[in-house]
Image (cartoon, rainbow, N blue to C red):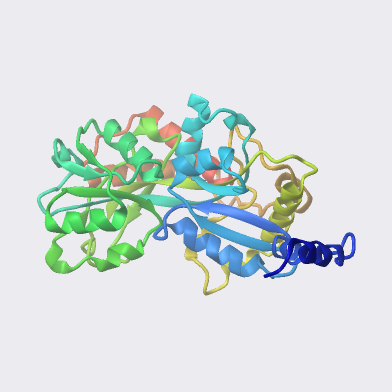
Length: 364
């Protein structure tokens, strides 16, 4: 048994100012909250950790969280959470409701990629209206899917019986017929859906973009190339997508944590081209580091890097009037194909404005 006196002598033998094992292990430490292990963000943050964690100057630790809603609260109140991945619609709602307290002090590092809203349903469910009164799983409390799913169903004026099972449990209950559908916000193709068997009869249900939601979501589409067993060839399924944002905690400027995050940002932005190489998640190809988020401040070191290095310009090969005409025709064709209501001129103009912001790297 080691006596207290011996321990004190051992500690005294360490030269003043010498770096300990604990110091070395925590050098450059940045902890990133993600969603579940099935989520796009967990897989992409693993890419980032593999690239940047050199074991000497930087330690990147992705942490499995409970989704966008909870991640945002954890970023404000939990010790050690430096950065989190949060859905754009959740972030905007938090600002509007001023919850959690002090949300206005949160800054963003970068807008990352878009994640598609999946509504996987049983054979008897042909449209979202068929879900009225039926059990639909929107995910566990705190998950971004729970927020997005509720918002989209409300916009569709469909009232359902909400269940809150973890995703794998919900998937089994869907196949057994205990629930009629499950919602899931993730990048296509979702690995979990590769488990669907033809005899299950499951399919993806269309969720066309409502004009009143165009400020938070963008049009998206599933094809048979994305899901051969869920989408028949030649009959794409319309849906919506929401942006994922990398946000940072309110850190004391001169603190070690802030220096660590600043170092992480510099390494991330500088080495970003490597994430576009084969072997990394394909959603990295959607990321535009210079993309801006309206109404939100960018984290200081990230903003400084962008200002110093600039962003990739978008080539202007088509005039605005030509692009506007092409976009209007595209909307008309999609409306006819999906059987949706014809958009008014103002609704088309609003969507075109959002498209332009996306093209210029300012999409939400």
